[in-house]
Amino acid sequence: MPKKQLKITLVRSINGTLPKHKATVKGLGLRRMHHTVVLENTACIRGMVKKIDYLLSVEEV
Image (cartoon, rainbow, N blue to C red; front, side, top):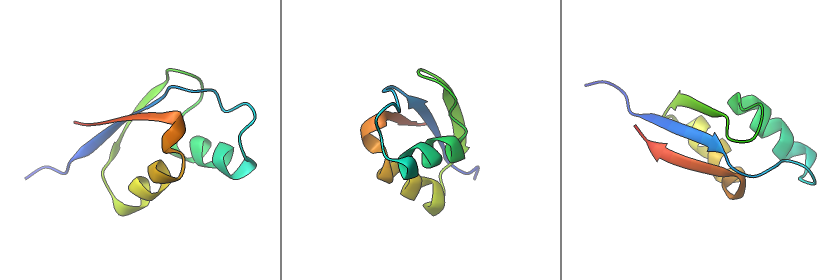
């Protein structure tokens, strides 16, 4: 059975956010608003998403 994946989109600007949150966005591979990446659904990725969930839109693929 293939691993589940998450489709993660940056929907809010990172201007004015904490430096740790900006680093988390960069760590997920998001570069600009409305940029989307597809990543594997692992515990590490879910933790990063939970940390900055107010900036993201997440769908399971």
